[in-house]
Image (cartoon, rainbow, N blue to C red; front, side, top):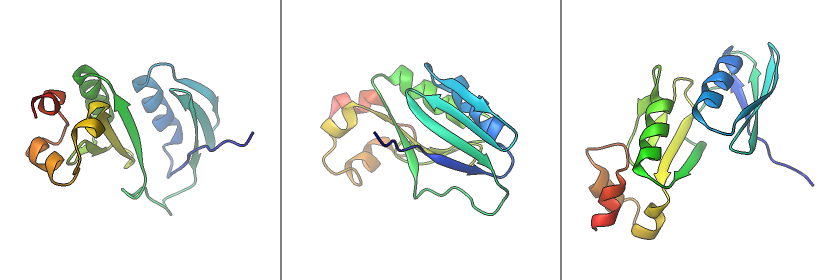
Amino acid sequence: MPTITPFLWFDTQAQEAMTFYTSIFRDSKVISSHPMVVQFELLGQRFVGLNAGPHHKFTEAVSFFVEVDTQQEVDHYWDALLAGGGRPDRCGWLKDKFGLSWQVIPKALPQRVTDPYATLQRKSSPLRQIRTQLLRRG
């Protein structure tokens, strides 16, 4: 059966990124690590990282969506992914120190929000990180 694997282009930081990501997500593993190409798995999803120079950068056009159950999990992934120079953004989005975009979102959000641009903006501003207690209160 075919598989789809995210292939991440780094300048020179593929090994550093692999170590960073596998330290954050439980049940992750390093598959292979070479100076040019690394392979790793996060929560059952395989990734490939390539050291290929500064020609291409990550943009918000692609992000990884981390769906969690609790505020403790939101806080864990949010803080860990921002560590070392990441940048928070609105509505659960952030960029890690490598420039890769992530969304750390509670599972309750889709059930609670019918207009993600109006309702979520109102409930999370000026906070950037989603708070599960705001989702429960209505």
